[in-house]
Image 1 (cartoon, rainbow, N blue to C red):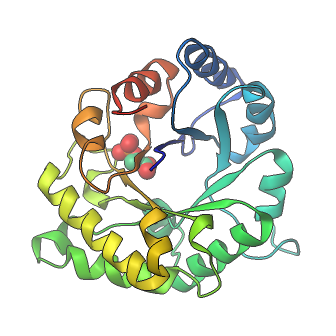
Image 2 (cartoon, helix red, strand yellow; image 1 turned 120 degrees about the vertical axis):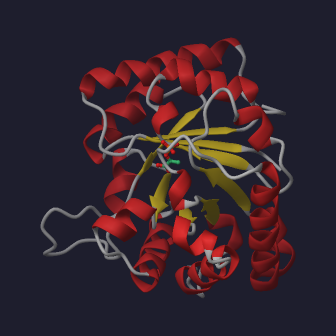
Amino acid sequence: MRMLLAGNWKMNGLRASLGEIRALKRGLAETPPRGDILICPPATLIAEAAKAAEGGPVAIGGQDCHPLPSGAFTGDISAEMLRDAGATAVILGHSERRLYHGETDSLIAAKVKAARRAGLTAILCVGESQAQREQGRAAPVVAAQLEASVPAEIAAFDLVVAYEPIWAIGTGKTPRAMEIAQMHETVRALLTTRFGADGAEIRILYGGSVKPENAAEILAVPNVDGALIGGASVKAADFLAIIRAAPGL
Ligand code: PEP
């Protein structure tokens, strides 16, 4: 399966940061990747980031979208607007959106549908909290999130799933390779139950404190088809080091 390494800049980046996208493009021109590379900058930078990335292997994505194409929703951005600005994908249901914006699975499902309507790949995030893992509920929590946030109408090829244990995001902590393998196997089984043979083709990313130092080990875990990378995606040098560490990339 073709790997996807996706960077989530979160609420970081001014126009000066576009130099990182240019640096990434330059770095990849020397050794073109065999997988897909995506950067999701803040919405204010999408159009310029898409221009900066033009002609190279780096695609640009959004970090959220509204379920509707347009309307009286002050401050919101639709999937169509992301697409129009040059995005080809959108992260949805990130735990920071679930936590700080009260996003529910049903709202996230509507956003996944919106991504499809606009022709964007939806990168759907799921993951358990520290307490849920300690209570032995990690797998049922992730299963319930997947069940409720993948809309009936979605086609397998429009979807990427990112398993992001909340306690691993931005903390420097990661699950053991065996724990990642178990969860990704669970997610794979759920996807094949849901989509049949197509479920085997859906990329399942791991996210949570992926760094140049641990990328090779994590990306070699079975059913890990790439990574969603926060902190280490903001600087081209770190992101390039992760790309170079990825087996098969
Ligand atoms: C994320 O924001 O999705 C993420 C995985 O962040 P970090 O890599 O910084 O843990």
